[in-house]
Amino acid sequence: MKPVIVVHGGAGRIFKDREDGCRSGVTRAALKGYGILKHGGSALDAVEEAVVVMEEDPHFNAGCGSVLNEKGEVEMDAIIMDGKNLASGAVSAVKCIANPIKLARLVMEKTDHMLLTDQGASAFARGMGVPEVPGEKLITGRSLERWKKNLEADSNPQQFQKDLGTVGAVAIDSAGNVACATSTGGLTNKRVGRVGDTACIGSGGYADNNVGATSTTGHGESIMKVVLARLILYHMEQGKSPGDAADSALDCMKTRVGGLGGVIVISNSGDWAARCSTQEMSWATVKDDQLHYGIHAGEWHTQPAEEAISSLGC
Amino acid sequence: MKPVIVVHGGAGRIFKDREDGCRSGVTRAALKGYGILKHGGSALDAVEEAVVVMEEDPHFNAGCGSVLNEKGEVEMDAIIMDGKNLASGAVSAVKCIANPIKLARLVMEKTDHMLLTDQGASAFARGMGVPEVPGEKLITGRSLERWKKNLEADSNPQQFQKDLGTVGAVAIDSAGNVACATSTGGLTNKRVGRVGDTACIGSGGYADNNVGATSTTGHGESIMKVVLARLILYHMEQGKSPGDAADSALDCMKTRVGGLGGVIVISNSGDWAARCSTQEMSWATVKDDQLHYGIHAGEWHTQPAEEAISSLGC
Image (cartoon, rainbow over all chains, first blue to last red; front, side, top):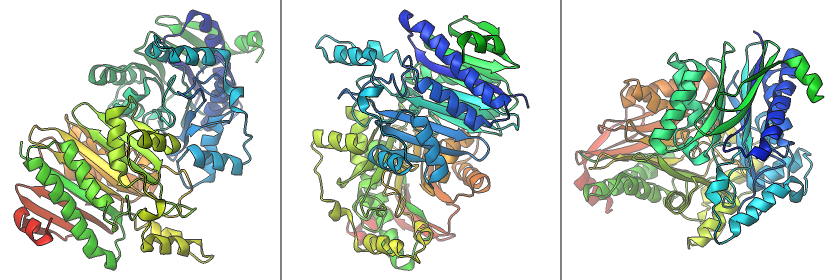
């Protein structure tokens, strides 16, 4: 099987000043994951490392750069899933760690559980020797400014909640295994303890070697209502292509619950799609050593992966 | 539409000394919910109140009677869902409240979110005026004894984890709306912060007026891997009856991930099923003013609802 990776940097309204950073961020992430796959690495390693790249990039709403909750804190959710055995690990409402996706993988591999939350997730992180980072280290000037604006009497938090920026990746490795990973800071000015779709298996992501893998982004509560990730794979089980399955599921979410979002999908034969019902979604993929990426509807850049690696210096 | 309610008191190994209490508990819960439906109440009210009856009954692993985590505390998860608009509310890892299902409903109706966890859920409960109960009030002698036994060097926690006892209800009201509710104390001696299937939409329950509603019980991590509740409704969308859909989904969970459990299902035409792949599951239903209930495979008691209400004094 030829390895393929697809990543997204979130669906919603991507403001002009953030576009270049998002393009660069998703291409770096996709190239990083593809490098792992090309060297015989697993889909699981590829999606984890691709997400780590975006968690560490302040352009995205995950890890450093996460939006702030009502108290001005970063509280994050993440999930990872292995299509081989349906194993999965997730964390919800975690604070003060740089890479929630790594903690999610530890939950999958070092516990009998699949989801650890809040204080229990923090205790587990400490037990695993995951370094605690001061909460402020994850807060960017942009996040802080937005949070403060939302506290003003005449604010419009909905406006900023459209700029969502959850990150995710799906991949297939040379052994034919698929995997997905998703990580997010959630909704701007959310209540303390709000958990969105990302930490919920079947909503924020799903991976099954019998079908494929998907990672979702968009309005979390709408994604949960239709269990979006699992819905996409059901459509593929019924014979739909990744693109048609994604379109059908996003359409269902829009018509049934009025929610918008975006998804990346890969099939177990290596076909892929990146679709959104929002205005924009940053995405990138590498297949057959060719990098493809875009943000706006119809935007599609192609470049040899080697050339992109040289020009990005990654 | 004729109203119908189905409840379960958990799938697993039900020990002899607990059988009578479980039979009585599920029948009381089903009769309570049915009374609401017969007086024109909503499916949502019926499933909530049926689950409250079982949360307050120490025979079940939900509310008072919940199993204890590794620290000897009660930490609970609950979810409720409205099939009319796919609205849902859930809480995870909540402590010191008597009825997590009521808090889940408040999340659904009083916030823009769908899942609140741990400290944030507690803060929300306080804000809503939900009374805090001392943690000890939820701990039964049986839970404490079991927890202590599991801490002994030669203990076999797996043995007790088979006695699961999550509770749940599904219903259809006279307007044709379906709803589901599920509540649990989770796994015996679980890690602090472990969240299981119950709080995850599509795993612990799902309700959609276009198809029906279901509530699940059993090994939480296995249920999550196959997103069991949503899987059952997919089978029904493909034309399967509630019973066949339940059997197919439980069979998939057993063969694919080696997990056992039980489910209750109702279709949007009022057909219902209660199935399990475990040794036992306590269940009860009321339809056409007739109460049906059982625990063991093949056990099926029938009694006029009025007569059962008189004899139980409820």
